[in-house]
Amino acid sequence: MSAPKTVHDPVIGGDPRVDLLPPEITAEQKGRKLRRGLAVAVVAVVLVTGSGIAAATWEAERSQANLAVVQARTTELLAAQGEYIEVRRAQEEVDATVAARRLATSVDIDWTDYLQQIRARLPGDVVIGAVVLDAGSPWVPYVQATAPLQPSRVATISLTLTSPTLPSVPDWLDAMATLPGYADSAPTRVALLDSGAYEVSLTLHVNAEAFSNRFAEVEVSQ
Image 1 (cartoon, rainbow, N blue to C red):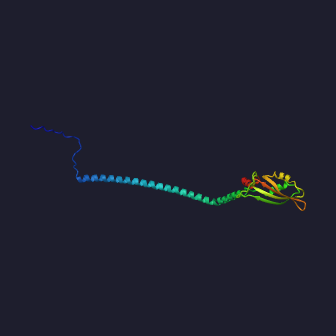
Image 2 (cartoon, rainbow, N blue to C red):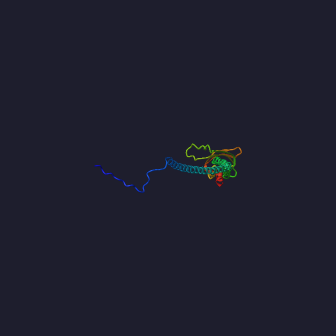
């Protein structure tokens, strides 16, 4: 005895399973859809590329504008610098001159004033016959005494004095000790001249307190 056959009920309202259109029409429809999709993709690519090019162009123009501003400012600064280069050069020359003068006058002693002070400390009838000055320089220090306990000195004044009467040399030396910058002094020779007058050779040493500093004071006031 054979098995019973199963009968399937028809499905009502389902999708049609049979395509009655010719294959050529179906292929044409698919081709149109594909072409539309490709066109949309191409347009999107064009838009994106165009936006990127526009953004890059704008950024390049902005950078170029900023560069032009910087270059213009640099040109202005260079022009201004060129205007004042002579002023700076002149100022440098002035500074160099001032520095050289400061160095050269660092050991300056106002000898005219100092000799007047020596003259004021001697008796009125004593005549200064000769004066020999020996001082150091900014580049070569003054030679110091080799004997022990000798005071530091920056210059030596050798005087030849003539007195009509027997001189009181110790009194002269005491008077010299009140000079500014006085280090020490001593007679090196006392002689009786044929005229009856007395000639005295006197050596006087002075220290750094005798420096005038007059040019330094002028520079400070400027």
